Amino acid sequence: MLDDSNWPRHPLITLAGRFCFTLIFFISGITHFTDVDGYAALMPEGVPWKTFWVLISGAVELAGATMILSNRSSRLGAWLLILFLVPVTLVVHGVAAVAAETEMMQAIQSSFFLKGVAMTGAALLISQSGAGHPSKGPIVD
Figure 1: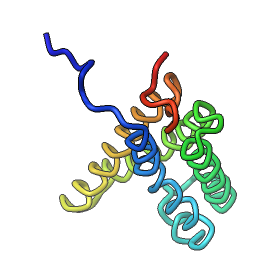
Figure 2 (figure 1 turned 30 degrees about the vertical axis):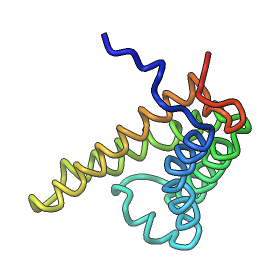
Figure 3 (figure 1 turned 180 degrees about the horizontal axis):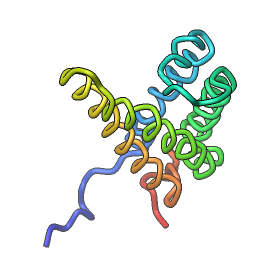
């Protein structure tokens, strides 16, 4: 059995992990406000109130990422990101992967879909264990 109790632990690793995980949500959240039409165009036909959903999703991304990066209500922040990731992953990237007209676009959208699944998994872990704290070291329950 592999014993990981002696593996290196450092408080800055926790901070770096939070930064790496939240960076995409900060960038995406900001661009939801600077390119509303571009994000609305990504949504499948028939989705009502596209502008509303783009703006709300940008706010949810920024709020969730801020909570996780700052480690203030990080579990709630993770649930906010899950609330964002599940519909976006399924409705935008899942539908686009199935409806793609070329193999290249199908591969790209499938990659985006799997990225959404992976980020949802990471957010689920944070929702249960929290995001750790640089001064307290690794996550411990």
